[in-house]
Length: 204
Image: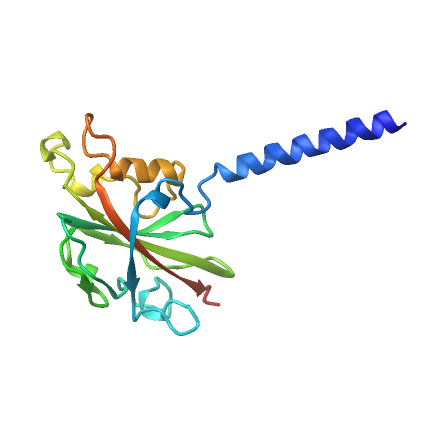
């Protein structure tokens, strides 16, 4: 009897271990081992209230205006450009914002509305409260040759992730693609990064 109980206990522990491993490999969050070795900087925003809630204006809802959030940060020495992403961490890292070729370090509310290199869909959680995180990456180089893109394709195609869709791979792979300079230099393009996050509640 004790032997059966022991085998059952071991089986349960093995199943739990497998489930935990699978969950940790998913794309449902933005934790990254690769970012832990990269310098970080502070990103601030007046588009977040004192309760860490994103303001209505940035949302794509009946009470919102679908405006890109206000952001500001200190310049990073040596940065050729900045890259911005906004994800819904609650919904499989759904991409809400992707802005490339950014050179300013203080972006007003709605900055991306008239910028061709910015794609944005404001938060619109179907139910409950979702957590939205914005990453700002300071890049050492533009890191690609525009001639490699299909004719007429936007530059944003070079960078991973599509606005309006979840990330199709885990976050560490996402970071690796951004950090790549060339075939000979697979790392080193991210000089530093900053992030800011807040929540938004579904509009009834």
